[in-house]
Image (cartoon, rainbow, N blue to C red; front, top):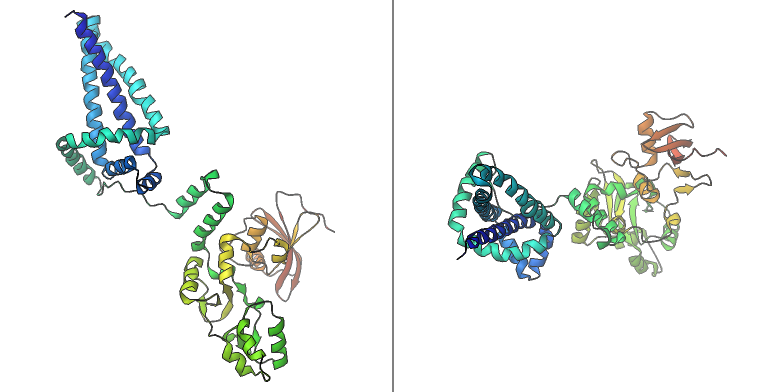
Length: 427
């Protein structure tokens, strides 16, 4: 055997060790960077590689242990061989000094930065094939891995880390919103809007979307019978509250489908109307929409009366109102749905004081605060901190407001425009 053979063997062994170092380095990054939710989906679909990776990630301490044991072992062997080669070519003094420097550069480029960068960009391409080797290697080195983990886990407990399970972290609502936003073209824009609206249901209560008390159309049993019947025949609503004297004294909810039973009779009495009315369903004003949606489902109801903490009626809310918070208005005629918002020729909007702030934001894309007053009238009064004697101007965030009309201690209308726009001309 020639003298060159041992050197060639050492060079080949060194090359192999650097490749193994690159394998362990890329495996570590690929395993830790893989998308856990996609991995779980693929495993649930029966993909063997995904199941194998999930088994390894179930105990990240063992996975990291076997990877680092292998990586450190091959790196130390590579350092020893590189030193032997350097001594052979450079001598006993220069060789040991040069070998670590050269080997560090080689390992850094070819066994660390390059493979780890690739694994971070394409984690599945690395993790799935690597799991074929890592799983049996973990079984082979299990006693050593167990010993290393026992010591490291003991140290972790000293600094307060109690659990080392590798289960996927639960996403918070805000994190899930970010996931939906970043889905891009994977989720159509319309579907993104619906998903985000569902996530927002928990932050919205029934008094944010209810029909306010002064807009509730109901049957007052103290009115004369002819007026009541005329109201029933011409009503645009399918369900009407029935009350006596005051809306706080609600007797029931009348479905106009049931009204045909007494309208077909020759003699209609108020008692027959009450008889066909269903008992009212009351809802606390602070009930979150996601809770109320489930309550409607459980109670087999489609409409409820919203009451405050004193039991006074604040308004009513329907199942359709909640569904519209998710899917949007059930009509494309926005102008017909928002009679309280009027676009002017100068680009400003004349908005009635009773307009709901959330509806203003949804219709115009504004960001008026919704954590306080629910109507434009209440928002203006809160910022003025007094009742205006006449026309006045103010700014709320980026929105400029000019009070146009005040009546009966109520701001009935205001001209509004975004501050970034040029102030509208007075007509």
